[in-house]
Length: 112
Length: 116
Image (cartoon, rainbow over all chains, first blue to last red; front, side):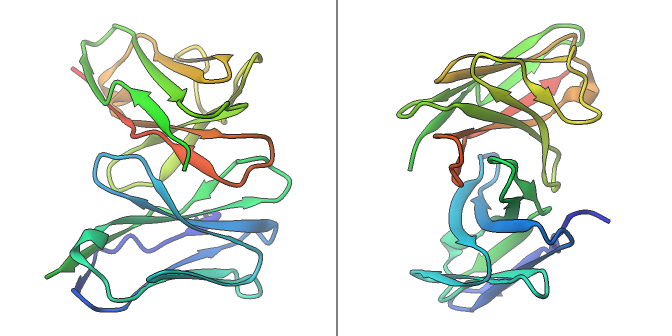
């Protein structure tokens, strides 16, 4: 079993839709949770970072972490065509400096 | 956010030759840099962790003699793919940590390597 599971999609939604992206994980030691956005042939760009359980909101993006269920989510409100990209979840243990464990990424297309 | 520059963005080389990829932190000092490999529609797979001034730590299954990593300064790490073969064709991405314990890893734009 991989440590981080993420449905690769593809996911296709109309402009303005609410998008829900999810990851599950198996290692209860993970404490830091991140979402990255990656455009084609580019490096990942950090979108959201959350420590432990809870919610975090930044503009149209909301990240949720449920450590009891080992489940994290990213919600995108009022999705735009420019949001079309691959979204990768990533996480790390508190004891390992910077060592990130990535999901496979979900490919999202927002059509106008 | 901090900027990490990776060069070249893409490279094509012949089988048997070596290719060097550079990763630079432009506006911060990176104590630690990471090298990843990404196949199409797959996740990032960590290849190695390099700390400035010391030998890189390679992940299990990664050939250290084939993928040479040098982190000679706080702003530059290089990955050299030696005796490249077509199966080495992939997308290579570096990331850098601004300081120990930082939770934000900044990524370079990646290098597309094609070995023919």
